[in-house]
Length: 214
Ligand SMILES: [Fe+2]
Image 1 (cartoon, protein in one colour):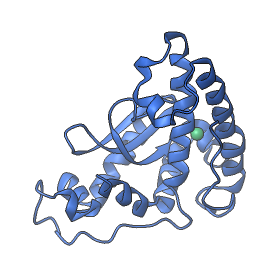
Image 2 (tube, helix red, strand yellow):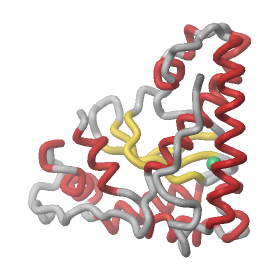
Image 3 (cartoon, rainbow, N blue to C red):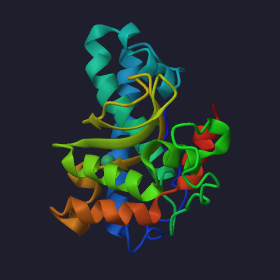
Image 4 (cartoon, helix red, strand yellow):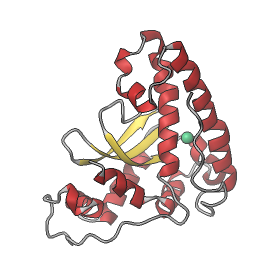
């Protein structure tokens, strides 16, 4: 049985960037519903006992008539677990890269995530501009991720609806939810303000931990 994981903070702890009412609704209704529906889909597909990552990585092995439900609810479950872990009250920043741009294009994982971001985009600010542009430009419901791609390189990518990067063979590091349910109560139609707020509460220490896990 998949269970709704405990939030790593209280509903109000991400204020004022992420309001308590949205966090509670997003977690207690949206995420909880994905969890319940994943349990139904996993049972119907005979996949009880598998981890959600195993299910998402091997969707093509699941019975054809359950694949859509597993994509939607398995992705909805995994993506939201990942999203809550991507946030932290007040946010957690990366230490400044010690490479200071001297090694553009040449940073290795051992240099850390700040160096890898500098190496790819030139600076964290330029990365943030590119990430923001992707999140603003995503049409409809979905997610914008920083991932490590199959070539081992950092990449900003978006997925639609509840498609998970796990299914696409990508290793996610951090994510913003750009479904309207993620921000509409407080930010209305102004997704740009939600993205700005997300940067104030993004947990880059967690992203780096994932990056260094190899
Ligand atoms: Fe969501």
